[in-house]
Image (cartoon, rainbow, N blue to C red; front, side, top):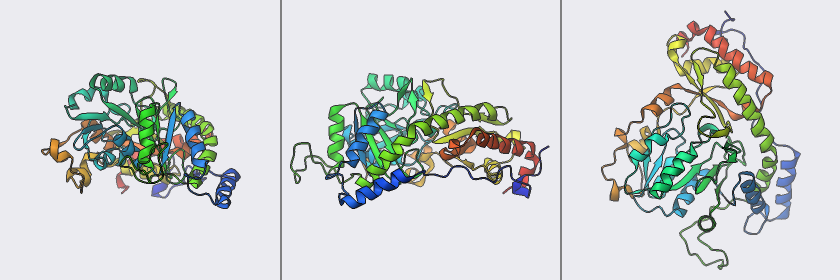
Length: 414
């Protein structure tokens, strides 16, 4: 048996830190100073944001890119551009960050939660049809952790029902589905550039689309309702100022140069971890390659934990023990979104569109069993860890194996 667990006073498997995030160098410094000294800090006068929009759209195999202040806004504007009206229903998964569903509320729509697939934690196409009503207008599949959702099946349902598909790609920079990068496979795609994301400027987001009309509406909505060819004080649509700054655009252009190499590294390390961690009893990596996913972006390396194999120890005790060995590990989303007070108690403030079509909606009665199990079983390792070397990945395996071998000690971990 391996030596005593570090959390119980033993020696750590690893003392060296994993790669820090974000990564930046002289290129980023020079770009920010260039914008600073130019005196042109806003994108309506500058060119940095426009250059980034074009470059990122091309990288993600999309025709149009509209950069905005954050990923939540990009989702909300995409919903508005799709024509969502008060009370219209939007199908979303419950295993995702708040913004996927709260953006629907902010667009005055009604989120309808549909369960996830047990092997991927992505929206389960088999569950979608039963949730569709005459008021359903859109589906938001999330490429959770960076693994592409089953887009062919989701799109087939959407096309039969005349529904808009908005990809939530907040985790999925560089992810591919059947060889094509995500973001414009559906009608629109939403990305986040928040601090933890695989491509970051601290905050920020972008909407991608291949549809000229939809892209023009998104561009209008993010720029105070102005339209191309219109005047500065001409406002045709109900937009606001959601524009990205030139500082962010310049920073993201530098970061984008790094992204492809980082994406390849994460994907290779994720595949290696899948193989090695699957050999440890009680752990099950997420499935890959069964539903059209080709490259995983690995914003999160995610695997399932079985407490029974670890002597009944909680997931939280397991994650604390692994982290104490020098490998950052945490539990995933603690509860399904419909259990959050925002939804369970409908703290929707002025957004009351649901009352016109679903006054009886009671999220406290929603049940998505697979998601509820995922909230107990999922373990996460963040994306920057996967930028390490093969030896760094071996330390992850060694730390987890040590915890398994000393699982009897987990009973006293709190």
